[in-house]
Image 1 (tube, rainbow, N blue to C red):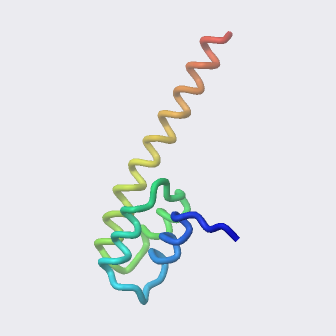
Image 2: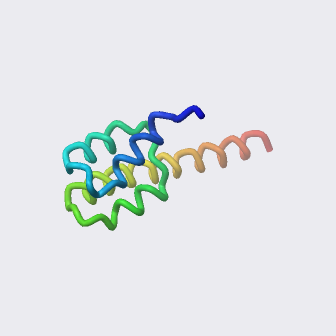
Amino acid sequence: MPTSADAVFRNVVLDPRCPLKLRLEALKSMARPSLRLLYRLAGDRSPKIRFEAGKRLALELSRKELRKRARQREIAANS
């Protein structure tokens, strides 16, 4: 069963028994974390994890908004 790197990083980030530094590095190493994962981490006990998750969440939400606007412009241009 092939496993992506992000899936491994996700398991490390969600494991509260892992050291904080390792969890942070795993979160930073993820290419495209899911919004669901980031929302879940925003409620984590550790302020450092919450802060990093908040930064990544803001980035992913802005990317989502940019894709939405690009799609709208493309539809308008084709009309």
